[in-house]
Length: 122
Length: 109
Image (cartoon, rainbow over all chains, first blue to last red; front, side, top):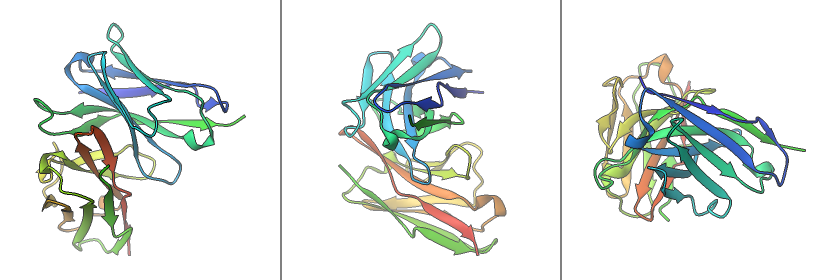
């Protein structure tokens, strides 16, 4: 059974960099795309970006200038870095497995982590 | 950018009733790229429907999805108490970008 677990600081100061890690168990990171999604308090879901096999990344255009997603295949983990954070980046951050099929025949997120709350405050 | 609009914002129904949730896209989309998720408060989203109408593993058959073009629907045939939650539609387009609708809350009347 595939499980995902987010980890990282729960409190980040404004203007600093938010860093989170998603640890994958029960599957190899090499087989799928992996995504980060966030949810501000009381609001809907926002896709942040995804990564595939270390070098293929795509980001939400609204966050692209501040986001980096990377993989550590030796640890079966992928990570999120979001720079220059403000209070608007306060959210629950989720990692998820993405199923695309051959040549992006379809796209959906079938396994999600429980989420981790990040608060941006001084 | 394709915008997804979910309606209604809130649906007040009783257990046993039928729920119809709408997801409208601002332009025609590929059916394979439309998915639905359920989120119970305090929990992560759970995949319900992939590729417009295919139920995810373990999802009861009271959940069904349909639609094409710009109009998509999630139907819950008979509401169970555990179905009262927020539902999101999600689209992949080849920009590439992934978009979520604003959500529909199904609450107990």
